[in-house]
Image (cartoon, rainbow, N blue to C red; front, top):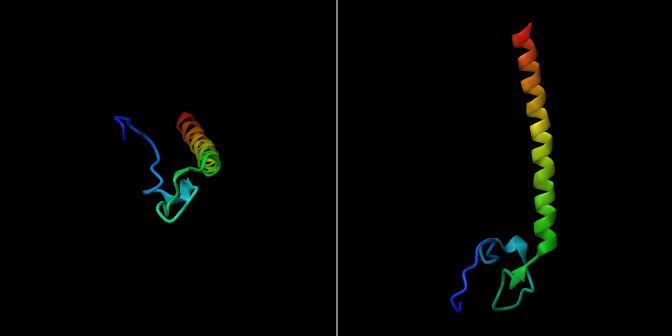
Amino acid sequence: MNGEYFEGVIVEYAPRYGMDMDATHEAGRSLNNVTVIGDLLRAVDFLVAQNAELQGRLTALEELGAA
């Protein structure tokens, strides 16, 4: 609209992140930052745990190779 370019989450395609819903905007009119940030924090927590597990496995394999 009006020459503006939007990049990021479009709530029509990701209704989980929409708020201010009405009859015209069933998925919402704006981004629900609380939901987005909560999902991002859970994703980061998952990745940190996964990285720690993989680092442990790598360390164990390096110790086997050094033995």
